[in-house]
Length: 386
Image (cartoon, rainbow, N blue to C red; front, side):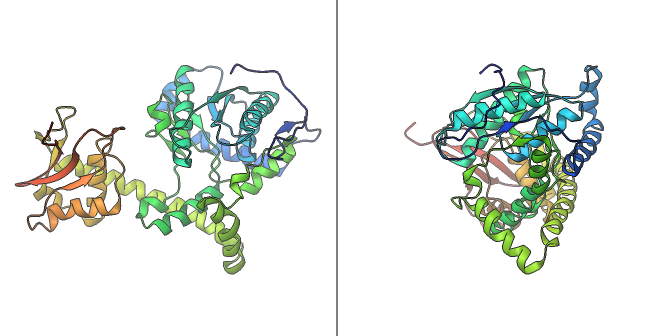
């Protein structure tokens, strides 16, 4: 979709939800807008300290440029509006997944609001492989990255807030997936599906901001945001955490509980980043580049030296395995990692550990991590009838 003219009329979609519209505010920016702008300034300082970001900005004499993924909700619209007030050049991309009735109308009006705020905008229709949140997220980030690539490799910004951090921490605790699952989302990512699709980086400048600030900023900016019914319907786990669990936590543990959870997630992120860096250094010591797996000749994976691996602290070994298999295998569960570690540390002649293929659709046969003498190797088990 190309940029469209502003339609200032308020409208109700077929689901009865108020779609976003914009009226120019007559007052000076209030405390919520100022809170978000301070967060953007702090994030931009972090961004500017990255070498790759500095190289980009040297060629952009007109100031900071970015892609912002916009849903039409309060979080993303407040990000667009406040970024414009910061003097950033913003191209807002509204992704229409087509998973809700009236989604095209919501997307179009969100794009109109972004233009009224001073951004350029477009709507992109995507078709997720499955009607799941994960599939929609994958397609959304791919589309955002492709737009960023087409515009010269810009960073993509999304509007995750501190409340999203708290929700993710609680979900991670339930899943029991380790420190990484409860670590807060980082403010800048250079390894992400959007980056794989062509963005310079993925940025989250609102992680220090509460959802009440984004709702308040929209009111101060004269924006009526769209309220996604799935966020409060209770149909998915995150919405139940948001609407039922967190209010109960506030009631039992006090109003500061959520702020403390957000701060905890940020501290855990610092620890997780350090351990990941240590694991990367340890992986270099463990890899044997003169010994490779045989995966149909499609890629070469260095084997892991078991003697070197077992000398590593337990806190690093699981991270070493995950980094070794990153991009070479699909998502690994705790059971996968524990079983692979046991091939080296608790060896009693057990067979290889089957792990998911990275490719979709999966090739015939199984992808395995096996022990061969003093090495761990990644190999493929080809069906005998082939």
